[in-house]
Length: 335
Image (cartoon, one colour):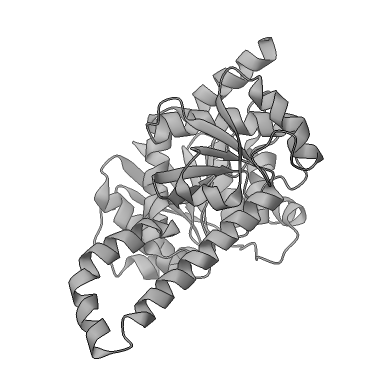
């Protein structure tokens, strides 16, 4: 049984969407148990509207909430009875295998490191979401945890990302690329120029060189390495373009009787195509390199994304990703 601690109070639609997603995950997989952490009465009120296996949904009371605007470090240290801290504590004490939150990104990132701690040898834990591409999905690493990363950090990101894509997505010998402004090795800023030769000489990964932003949606690389400033810009642009494209296509199909008729004919195929570019389908972004699994979902997450993220934790645990990351980092230290 994979036990997942869920921050029931985090996100724009909490606790309603969080509880709904948790119940959906438990119904879909008999191998999952969810611990909903937060204000007990509010969670009970939401649960009252669903039928579910009460043996696999448990409430863990927490009286405080860390708000989005609060300074993360201070909030984690002062609000010991917050839903985020109490849920992280469950993972630290090994009462749960994973933690999921749609709440404050800063608090989740800081809390993961302060409460759970890093795997020995991991310099910086990166946030790594899956993003849709023409060929399936790619892993964008880092997208928000380390804005001022060093070259050695990016090399570790590449190794951890390769382990993730091979184990979770089943991609053998995943292709690794570094985000750059051109394909030539001599291009890029100081960080990219320093990191490129290091990745080139890292035997544990299949490094294919640079990737330009326009080629990311084509799926030319399985693991896309960058520091968090660049990664976050790519992710947010992806989200914005995706949402705008879907909205524009829908609006265009309703402009005339002929377009509406055409829309009826292409609707099944179009729906499937657009769904593949919906980031909610891929769950949250794991913070790799910690002693326990921490997954951050979008603040605007609806029930479907919460459900997918919880099920993602099950796969992560079953594939023993942390142990594999530990081994690849330890191997590097020995060398």
